Image (cartoon, rainbow, N blue to C red):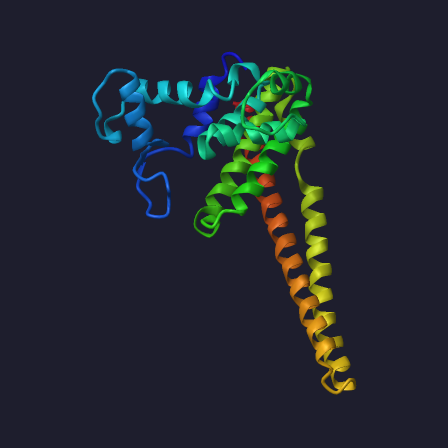
Length: 270
């Protein structure tokens, strides 16, 4: 949305502060979310000599985020909240991927290019549903990465925070009460369903193990039955892990929204 860049950048900056050079981060040397390579490219475009990214000033930092991320994802064209989710995803994983998550969410052709179809469908789509769909796709992609075990916890919290902040932005832009919007979107039901499925998976696994022992004894070591039971147990364990992960992500989303609700209520009573 026009005029929303600074608000979105402030949200992103929460997770892009300080200097880092983590050996498992493919971005390498990074300051306030800007890699050395990106800073070099920006300085070259501006006709300035290269220098260490840690020397980047505030004006350069904002200009880089605007020109290299906000403009490519067409932040000014998107609805409030949708712009934030698309922008932060683009910052974290590249603008093409951020656009792809948007396109998948609105039913547009997924090519990573923001064209007329994407613009039209983004304008027509329900903003709240789009916000949820973008962040769901983003989280799914992150979980597929090999470095999920290293960065997954922080990424999950970031996506949960972006989801909540995006809903607040949409509520404010459409003159709705952000507290009510957040309360309506609390993923409590999803969390209960995930927990229920987890319990069912646990029970199923236990049953397979207990029942399997009796079958194996009765069939005197039938290897086919043994193999089938092992496969069944593995499938149930995988299902258990997936349902547990869903419950965990649902809990983080709930915590982020409840944190926003608490903040908003305090501001209203101040």
